[in-house]
Length: 281
Ligand code: UTP
Image (cartoon, rainbow, N blue to C red; front, top):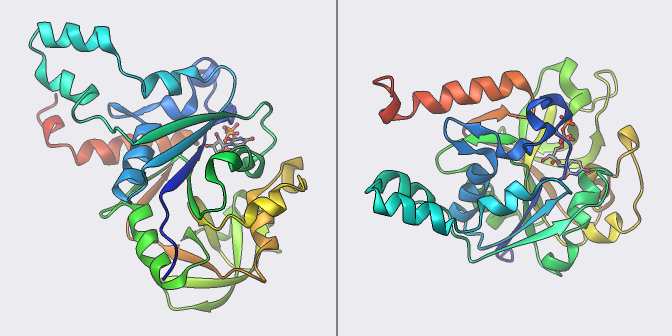
């Protein structure tokens, strides 16, 4: 049986340049979809999947993320005194309280692989999950829970994948598939951001990973790849010989909230699910 995953890394140190000027001061991961910041959706998804220790890899100027997960004692007292029970519940009883949240720093945004590497001391020699909060996934059960189920059968590395249009492969890590049952695809190769002509498939990695700690051995080498960044996909490609690698097509809908259109669509889709908003509230 695959070793249980109890820790997750949230790489949140990127600059969010596609969302300027909103992200000049506000971290991209604090942008709200309806009334909840992206990072909170990701933390709730991780908790639902059984994760109780979380590490956020942040950058200078992103202290709002840390503040969001700290108690707001004065605000709570204010809401309590005014009898605003629903608002109070949203920041206290209904708020996610993982057993442990730690913060690591990525000094310079050298790439996703480097951000994950910055969390190595918190993870140690255990399998772990990685969640990119700007990929918001509407799914029941949650995306990471679906992956945990698949991982019980496959072990190794498991990522969430989505079939993308041929002209979009250059934005993603793409799987070179060896077996595929229509839901789970096993990869024999991985390519980061290939042009449509070089892409071995259209199966793209989206922002959810269950990884074995061996990936740190490759990230330690700090090899740069596409865009001059230290790419997580390249480090995972280097583990393929010793570790099975599967992509799981998720039963759900993904919104790329790092892009303006994806963010707008997410707001509309999540609002549509909210019974309290149907009266125009
Ligand atoms: P993105 O490339 O989407 O994020 O990285 P970005 O760089 O913040 O956004 P743009 O392209 O400038 O608008 C995907 C995820 O990886 C994290 C980001 O915070 C985001 O969650 N990341 C990326 C890091 O933590 N460190 C990095 O060096 C790069």
